[in-house]
Length: 361
Image (cartoon, rainbow, N blue to C red; front, side):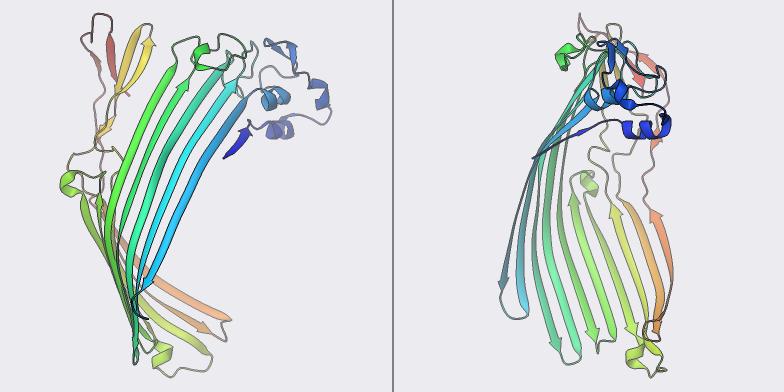
């Protein structure tokens, strides 16, 4: 658990805008008239540094629990099973506060009528692996194989509440002290990714190496018909200095090449966008904003294919290094947002006591 306070940059303001002819200690009593008039040389630029340090606060309280468990079982000297379980749990609270005052800077103040905001965030995640590995050396060959699976899940809940139109009392830092209807937002997010993956690597005479990988994910954020996707890779390198007789000043020379395909899934709830509401946005009328763009329901993961060839050489006991490479990257199945035309829609009353206006955000 941790707690810390963050203030606006009064040190920067003192350094940049306050001359050496001022004795800042003369302004330690930062109110001329409590909660109305500041004791400060500037009235249109920034606030009294003492007021910023002691009144305009951002507090954060963090509570985090991390736990992990790792177990190995060796069937033979070459065959090993690894099981890992990881768990994280957090609960954080963040508060912003700004006192009521009649004279505040036009640039440095949050709200001259006072402000308070509380953000509560909690969630947990688990990341669990099982991997079977096999390593074997047979003559001039080395073999390294791995196969495994992962389950990853996380959930997050956030509630944010903020005052509007000032505070009813200068230091009543509470949502209940909001002059206008408090602005409350809530978010819930969750995702699960199940994966199967493997890797195979073969080496010969410590000079020729070939490695291939493959992974298949099942991602809950993707549409059901495109929830699983596969992405492979293959790479190879040849150490020519191990196979050819080269000049003595050559320490090592190798060539390499690789090809890979990887995919990026949609974000959580990216394909099922919803209205966002604002209570009493215009007098007594509530508002609902819909997204300015939409994505297709049959969205594929964003994909990219890349390949590379290169060479590296080391000379004169590593005093001179040369590394040259050429790569090509190609994107496909990229997400394209479809814009929604701007318009204003008046909807029928939701009830006898509630009216709703809908505008594009």
